[in-house]
Image (tube, rainbow, N blue to C red; front, side):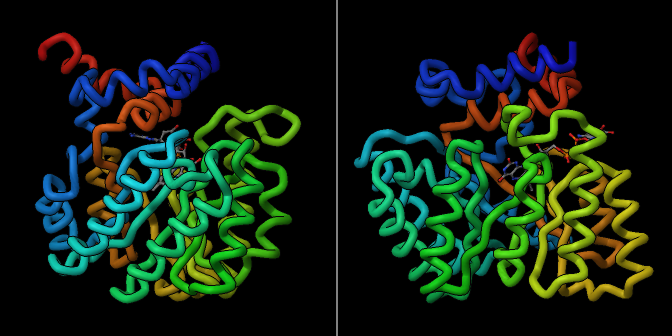
Length: 303
Ligand code: FDA
């Protein structure tokens, strides 16, 4: 049953018709629980409040699977403006981007050129840009783009997913690169990815420990208290410097725990999605945890 629900929401997240139309609906179905606002200006106060509580942020201007060059160029222009705002408002923030929003499905060179422009501007402001990892069909191209950019910029990193069999091996090539570790949000075939929660969790813990003993900064991105507690013990036992990692969670999830981790003195970063292209992101959140539906049902029936 849980798998059926997951498949249903993942299916919806990829539905082009619904994704396109949802842009015109405004926030519906309770999406405002997990999406912080419609544009950068509408999320500045949220970021300030989090920063005031010792929490840094990473901003995601929602959008993915763009097939039109003009739309990708517009997305890049928005990202450039967001960098200006982060800088001028002095926010403790970096950026998360999806390459399929910036032209990965259109033309590799076009996507790299967009990223170069973004990284150049971000570098001028001393800001980091993280490339979100999308579904497996984009995985090799995403790493290709990353490796090209790493030859030119040091303010770029990406995400690795513990459900993929190949991640452990890929970490060897990525050992000097700043990374976010997640479980993985897409539906992948059993040829390339673990399917069972226990296997994905076991892999997450193994990869997190490897990274924590390594030489580059890692964002440990999970809402799973069991994993966080196990890693906290590991960090303590191995005297791992708190400067070498942070915990990350998504906006709207386990907010109390986010504040508690920051109060305990851990570096903490909240991932803040915003924008009109919210449908795919929102459906993936429902796929991960059907209980999230309980949180939003009130809005469906009472607004
Ligand atoms: P999971 O959903 O496996 O939950 C584990 C346990 O934690 C649950 O059984 C429950 O006990 C508890 N729990 C979880 N959520 C709870 C809640 N809201 N309230 C109470 N208890 C709760 N994916 C991807 O493929 N590419 C990417 O780039 C990113 N980026 C990203 C950034 C950040 C900051 C995060 C946190 C996540 C991502 N993800 C992602 C998504 C990620 O891959 C994954 O799908 C989700 O984080 C869900 O897995 P969790 O590890 O959070 O716990």
